[in-house]
Image (cartoon, rainbow, N blue to C red; front, side, top):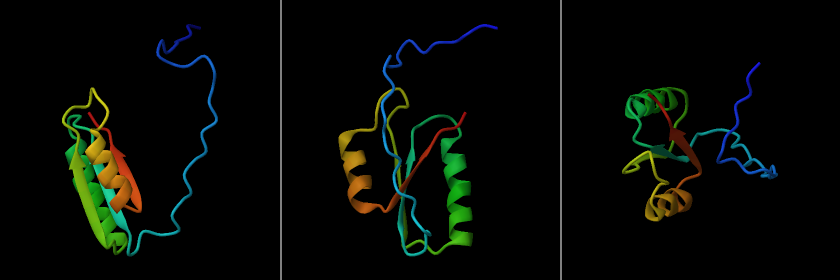
Length: 93
């Protein structure tokens, strides 16, 4: 059996705690980050519909990265961090 190795991975695993789960999404500001992969916007459109059917979010903020090959610009990350209770990042192809 062949083994695959990620050449960019750290040789030391890091212990990063998971973010606390939000009890529910009612009256929450939900951020959605489209990373600019094909069909990511379609996924977020459908997810927005489902969230609005199931919950009553106060607001849904959508932002798009200029390109999927680079991290989101600092201003987008700061905006989502400061304004949102929850952020969903979309990856699709």
